[in-house]
Structure formats: C-alpha cells, structure tokens
Length: 345
Picture 1 (cartoon, rainbow, N blue to C red):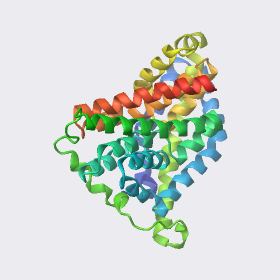
Picture 2: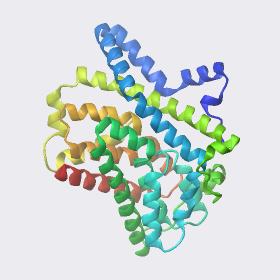
Picture 3: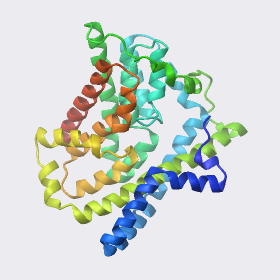
Picture 4: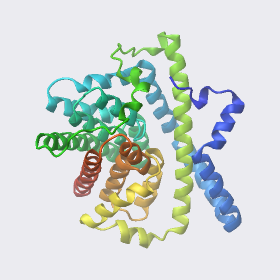
C-alpha cells in the first residue's frame, strides 16, 4: 500500500501540501487577485469560505464512504466482473465500474493489469469508461452540489456509456477493426495492482481488524485532503467565473436546445475539466449562468472519461485504434446522455 499524505509526519505533510499543484494554483490565483483586483480577493475568499462550510458534511460523508470500500476490501470485487459470458461481463463491468472508487487516472493501472492478464477488451473498456464517471464519493458530492436527480441521472449514464463502449468494442473486435491492445511496455503498470486483483474475501465490518482500521484512517485522511484541495480550486474558480464571465456569453455558448450546445460542452469538457470533484461546483456556477442541463451532463461525462491527464495515461499503454475507440465511445455516449437528460429534465 502506498503511503498517503495523511500518514506522513507533520513537516512532511506540510511540504507535500505546498508542493501540490492544486494548492500552488490557488496560491497563484490569490497573488494575482491581490495585485490586480483586491476587492475581488476579499469577495472570492468569502465565497470560498461559505461554499466550503456548506459542502463540508457531504465531503466528509463522501470520504468516509470511499475509505470504507477500501478498508473492507470491496474494491477486490472488481476481479469478479471479468468472468463468464462476454455480454454478461460487459454489463457487470459497467456496473462495477460505476460503483468503484477509482478516478480517471487511478483506473489506468487496473485496466493495464487486466489487459496484460488476457481479459477481453470489451468488458475492460466498459469498466474503463464507466469507472471515472461515478463512484460513491462522486455520487454524494454530485447530489449535494447539483441535486439528487442529476446525480441519479449521471450514475445511470455512467453505466449506459460503459455498456455502449463494451458492446461497441465487442463489435469492433469481431469485425477485425482492432488488432492488439497494449503497446510495448504496457504491462509495466501491473505490479501495483495485486491487491485489487486478489479475490480475497471482503470484510464489510472492517473495524474488527486493526490493520483495516489503519487503512480506513489513512484512506479517509487522503481522500478528505484530495477532495478539499480540488474543491478549494473549484470554488475559487467559480467565484472568478461569476465575477468576470458575462452571463450572456455562457448562455450563448452552452444554452439553448439542439445538439450544438451538447457538442460544444463535450469538446470543451476535455481542456476545461480539472477534476471530477472540482468540476461539480464549476458546473453549478455555469448552470446558474445559463448552461442547459443537457450540456452540463455532456460536459461532466465527456470530461470525466477523457480529461487530458487520463487521455495521456491511456495513450501510453494502448495502441492507437484502441485509444480512438476509447475517445469515440466516451464522446458519443456523453452527447447521447446529455441529449436524453436535456429532453427528459
């Protein structure tokens, strides 16, 4: 198990926090505001403080849920999703992916290990696409930020997009459109995943095992820190967006009906997408400024699956045709889900 920031001695914790890119980004923005617009610095600080106080209960509940899954060993259930009939594997993998506590970058070593073990590409692709789109922490934070209806719709969309990707990949493999999966050296990510792939029994009552309590404590601390720092960035950017981005511009770009706003939101989601948790309050601000619900859904789904860091990690382990399929299914699924949500909402 990797040592988390929360388990380090206090001086090392401080040093690690100061070196964190999210913290550095906040510091740079605050310094720029102090010189360029001091009144807005005070306004942004007040906005961030109020927003952080409001989201704190949801943040702590989300971190506890993720830590409980890791401490109990429930993440090992992932391995059972990749056995049996291909169609059943795709459905199970999409469901497990949407429930697993892995981010868009954290899931990369797992899928590399699965592919290196010879697991068929179709269910791996289903898991791969659905996993970063939803997890227990993401669900609670989405519900607290954008509402329960939006969170449920996004969870269903995550499973549906995963199934679309799995079935589509199965078809591509059958017609011979995909030859080979991993690049040379693609198995290098496998070493750190023995724990995830180990089908050991799950201990739901983890508190009866001192070793699992340590895992929970460290996971809770690291998850809380990770959520807090990205939400800090997001709330600060939201305050700046509200101050400097005209409402008319947002409404013109992402408002309205039809596929135009959905396509634009999906394409913009990749470079603009900071982090799954950081994107939520940003999208909340965009919705208040005129973004349509369908465009918001497309932005979150496309950005969550294909953010630049995740895309680069995927590119490093799979061959171009697999990478193209990954991008295509993610974007297509995001646009369809956005359109359906916009139509039904």
